[in-house]
Length: 206
Image (cartoon, rainbow, N blue to C red):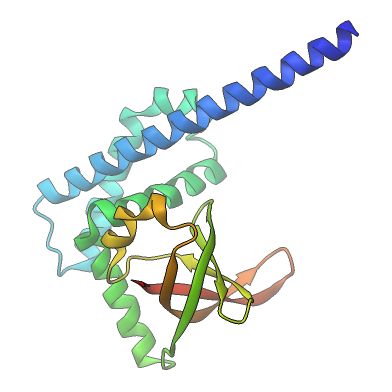
């Protein structure tokens, strides 16, 4: 009986610590994203020069990581671990795209130009209800269409009305929407093959 009580207490304590760490990690990501955006904007970067943006982005990100090393350690991020840093940087990028969209818009424009020089991008429209908003390295909208089928649409990049979506973020679940997306292939190392995913381009609220 004592063993059961001890194990129960351990799992409850562990869950509480994990939840607190996640909240602290989210707060730290938000703080660092703002710092990096401020650093880039105050640097006088040429927003028409992608190489200049990349250089300033790298400098500002490394500066913020260096200054936040103790806080990163406290939330379980080891800056000497490549996987930890890569995952954390992806999350930062998603937040930064909403805090300094002008910076990321240049990357989106260049990617669109590159695609237009290669394969034609075909935009699709999906109308339905948002069943769930899943958060991970990227945000995924799970949308049930008018025929009852579920679709996963990934928020991978800045898009036209991203700021409006951010403002309504907490209300997205169960909202009726009409989304524009395009399909892109990514390599999935788990199945050792390419998979096609839906990438969000615009969200229309009905």
